[in-house]
Length: 187
Image (cartoon, rainbow, N blue to C red; front, side, top):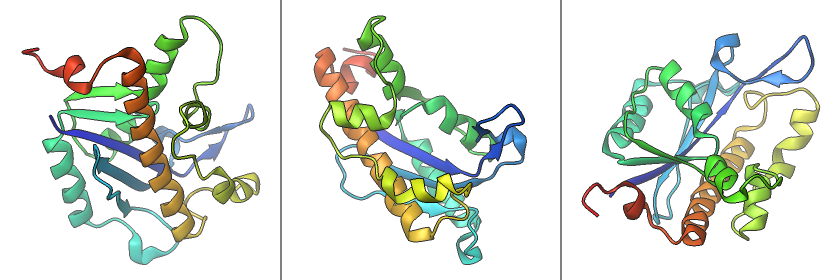
């Protein structure tokens, strides 16, 4: 079974009512995609829209990502509907199974209130921590991932991919399950 963990970074716009939105419907852009295969150490990372224009979209990068999406049986993500919305808005296709660490934690909570953020889950399961302090000064200044230095975005994004995968594995252990138990049809 091929398990692929994926995370995207995007630009965001301020809302009139306060806060921000990072959805593609508001002229936001996909900045980067990070992904890795279950238990592989390497995190793949591609930029699509960054102020350092030499890393902007190229069809070869898109093909590499799509090829891996085509091989994946299960796509893992934190709030994966957000990432899938972006992938589809950018022309990527994925029709396989999904595992959402946020939804899994919601089910595990059984109506008890605790944070479902990746930061909180990484701390709870004692796995790779989000690199929030890398990007928070820029975000507080109103910058988006487009404006944050490329190396910082990549380090932050790769940590998110690793943390998401590790949280998923720990959640499944807590449920007494494996990906195979959840998704293989003949077990």
